[in-house]
Length: 332
Image (cartoon, rainbow, N blue to C red; front, side):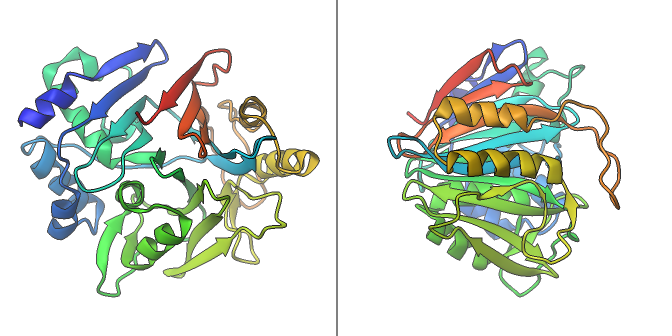
């Protein structure tokens, strides 16, 4: 509890968007959570509550659309850029300092753990206390080794691997990777060592990159893990919400994918951090309803855009498509 109080004292609001931040120095007991079990949304949420919130109930439920891509700057820095798209959201930047693991910076949506415009975390002591659960709901992030990962929704069926390995839900997998993976190779190995379980009733795929320039996309087809590696000659390595490992290319986001792909081809995947943010702006979602043949309407809004510089372990983020106002982020 003492560590939690110290962590909560760092909780603050940076803007009217809003964007919150928290320096998570408390022990969030990742190994204990994995041992207790996180094989379903209910089990995951209940055990997070027991470990971090003294039983105070909370739901951890990621959803959304999202876009991501990798690029290099003219001076060779490796970039990982990502839009988080969802119908509503409240961004919180979590700087994590685990006792057994790598330091990291990650963005979570407080809306996925029960907050909204009517229930703001700063309005009550209990509300602020519940923000401690955000450490287990990251949607993208980068660790001190220059490894970054993001999760995007995918149209394939819900993943329910059951091979006798440790079961891990979607956002818990991101926390596990940020804490334990030094690079893409290690991240793929970690994902292969667990049973992936999709949060909610939708499929997901992961996009990851590291400062060496290595990058991979991990998808789950018929409960089988499929790894798509970026080849050295591949200048256009981007991801939205349709699968890349199946012929059907099931899902949505093809228009956003083409926007990113065309710009990456034009630039040879070489661009400044500013140009990467401009590409995220071009691929943003604005809340209008979209339709792609064979798929339903959806009306997500870009909740945040972030460009991670994996070589410097810094980042720049824009919230709610306010690209005139950017926040500089770092792990230190």
